[in-house]
Amino acid sequence: MQQGERIAIVGAGIVGLCTAYALRQAGYAVTLFDPNPPGSQCSSGNAGALSSRSVVPLATPGILKTAFSMLLDSRSPLHVPAYYWLRAAPWLSRFAAQAKPERVRAIAAALSDLLRGSVQAHTQIAAELGAGDLIRRAGQLHLYPDEASYAKDEGSWALKQEHGLHLEKVVRPTIEAMEPDVGPGYRVGVFLPTEGWVANPLRYARTLAARLAELQATFVQAAVRSMQAEASGWTLSDGTRRWQAERVVICAGAWSRPLLAERGWNVPLETQRGYHLELPAPNLTLTHQVVLADRKVFITPMETGLRLAGTVEFGGLTHKPSTRRALLLGEHARAGLPQLDTAAPSVWMGHRPCLPDSMPVLGPVPDSPGLWCAFGHGHLGLTGSANTGRLIAGAMAGRPDDLRILAPFSIDRF
Image 1 (tube, rainbow, N blue to C red):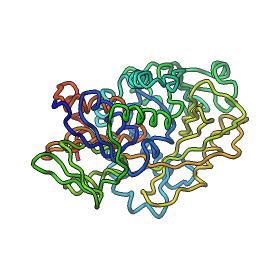
Image 2 (cartoon, rainbow, N blue to C red):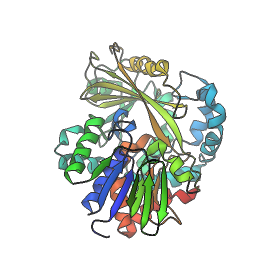
Image 3 (cartoon, helix red, strand yellow):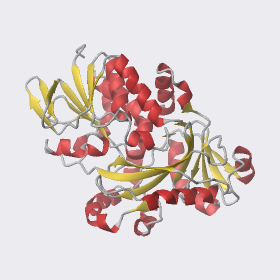
Image 4 (cartoon, rainbow, N blue to C red):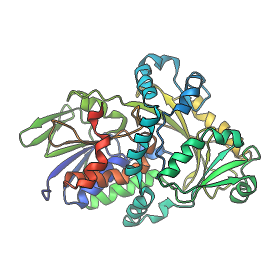
């Protein structure tokens, strides 16, 4: 490593911030580029979950049996609007191709290496920031209406256990004792005592950005439109201004694809639009992060209220959010929490950057010395951000173990 070597981070979401933090701690001079304030996009509105053993990809043989009917149902957790079917079809075809059992196991093994110790990694970062109260470690409670509903996910839980997940299956009396406001419609659950959540993802990102500024990282509010390889590194441009760096790390989330297209890489990156409702006065208090597993809704106690997050909607980067789809989260949540007051919610929509194999793109870009990737974490951007930053910094320093962990995530798999 060259002390003071200049690295440009394109994107100041939580992945870009954690990557910049690890690189700055390693002695690199870091500049972050983003047209928006740090952490203000998808990083601010996620469910807050820290799921270190969420290693099962979205595409599994089981999900393919029901996915098509779900995609057509505008009320289901997974939906493609009619206007987007033609655009989504190639991605969905590649998604389906990943559902072979041997491929699912390979993906789970790679994600296991990436996500291992995530809760502890975020706990350490938050403590270093003086914001340890942001990390909540009371565990996650995943709920099902009955044994038949639970049985549909039994294979996924078993695979997660193979990769070190500690879980406790619970039934109605225990559920009532843990969360008295859960309604009688949910009688079976899985408690994950070692998982957790971030109680305010936006404050976490802002606190991390503030620390980076104290560490003399530079923030530039600009949308990088092009990158040009030079003898001494890279020149970045927003169409008007230009900046130089020895290395570049693309952390632009759902907006990463065009930057790589100009380098000849056709990355099958799609935005899965996620929504949340936040309830300032929900009429109840939760001790754990509660997941209505059959409805794919995460219900999270936040500093700012109770957040209801979830759904997968394909729709691209430019179409307007669907308020109707966001409000469905309230209906789903009341199925599990009948006393929930969903009046006067704040509504949010963000763009999860997703690849068909549920794996991010990480590591150096072949035949482009100094160009690196760290994007496409899908539903696990917050969880995976701390380890991603550490691994990128380690790999740049040539550490063999870090290079090995990043290898399955290389852009050349496409």
